[in-house]
Image 1: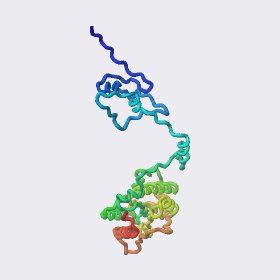
Image 2: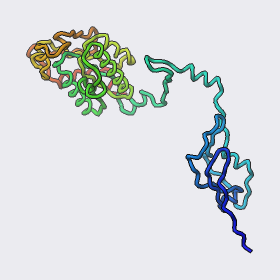
Image 3: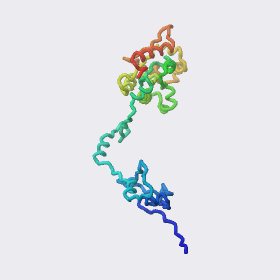
Image 4: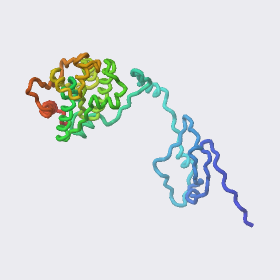
Length: 300
């Protein structure tokens, strides 16, 4: 008489649920049934001192050999929680910065020097400052083009462009202009740390804000370039028509008209355009390139 075997019931261990156990010749050789049909949603959360860890190497078993329970148990080893002393050490590394609390700096083994070696250049910030209409954006593009032709990686952070995205929530009031510069300074710092030659092009009228950006970076990473063009020359150009609007009272707090511009007191480079003998943007860009070459920024 043939007796029908009832199907194996699902496993009901304290760790797994809804695991269907079925026979397997290979598993029987090892001395335990094969697990199949694991329901991930049914897995219990592991306790604090026990998590399941899969072996990194497969178990090798000779033909017709038997395997003890200890070998099976080796697949599931307990990982104990860290000692309280280690936890206290981590807590001591926590810090608060402005409105950010309980944060910790995470270091990466790949550092700025490694990225610079890869790019064969030194990451830095070239901070172009000057009145509206002084030619900052044009010079920035000429500088980036020249660097690109030399096989050097650069990126431009243009004041107007940044206000289309990151800083679109800021106005042109004094406090918002300071915040605008601070944010751009932080982004420029990241570019420089990545090994990129970052070119900023923005009026940045206040000395204290430019000094604050300089203080963010290691010594030598901040190269301030003053585009020294007189107000009457910038106003005669008026490429955006902003001076005309400011004179008509339609724009308030416009730099050079009813808001001050503070020229740099000690910058690395001054590019002057006075009188009718004005240098071309390409010529002024080459002056910056010469500074970079002489000071080793274009090699790792």
